Length: 334
Ligand SMILES: [Cu+2]
Image 1 (tube, rainbow, N blue to C red):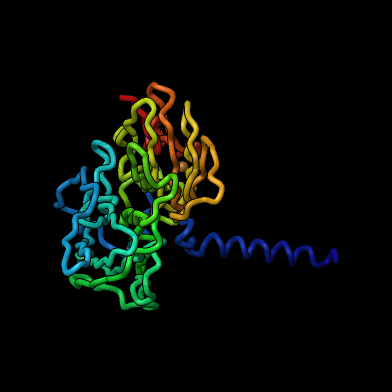
Image 2: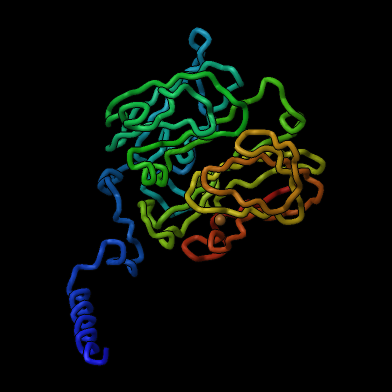
């Protein structure tokens, strides 16, 4: 065995030498650059000259045509401001992130006409909605992708009730979703349960993560901005409550990371998961919301003050590393 040692040493030396000469794989080549969001299928030039947008419509309007609720969405590039002075090269439905909330009643016939003004093909998936297979929005599985410039129509009956969402399913779904192609899709129930009625206010809240400029990356460390409804604290909208009120919160995680959302000074009741009423609602003050998950919570405003409600993954309560920012909401008593 001893006589083989120099051979082994030589082999290792050659291997190291070869490794040092070979071009480093893409995954590690730029690992120390502040922004390796180069894994994009689109040129950054498409955002040049677009106006900065900082506000969107909360809810999508519709036209009632022969008993069908007809919504119109346009997918297009947008320079979306998440924080004063911090602008993302984003994709948005109707030029905003998130896209406007679509809200209908259980059993409604819904038609959504989508125009693709992106430079890439796209589709829409109705996340949590039980649509016919042909309307499910998976490119090359249930439909051909909608090409740039094309218009496409989805139609289905709204079911089951609850908090759902709509989002791109690509192609390049990771990049397109990352750039902001999502919105809430709420189906109000025909027969409301105990937590579906009687509340005083409600808020729909979507979670997301961003790189420095909105580019897509496979490196989790590149995601340094975090938003609720497209805004990072202190630009997040406060939850306004009044002593004694019951507040319905509808959370949807449209990002790619877990967010354990913790409220100070209160507890909430977790009432629905993915739109379905829980058989045993439970009380907590921290609830982890994983990518793609939807939760309804009931908050009773019983402790006046100015409270924070924030992600307890504390890397997510900064804006590019600066606290406090990102996933923080303020609960304000009127
Ligand atoms: Cu988080």
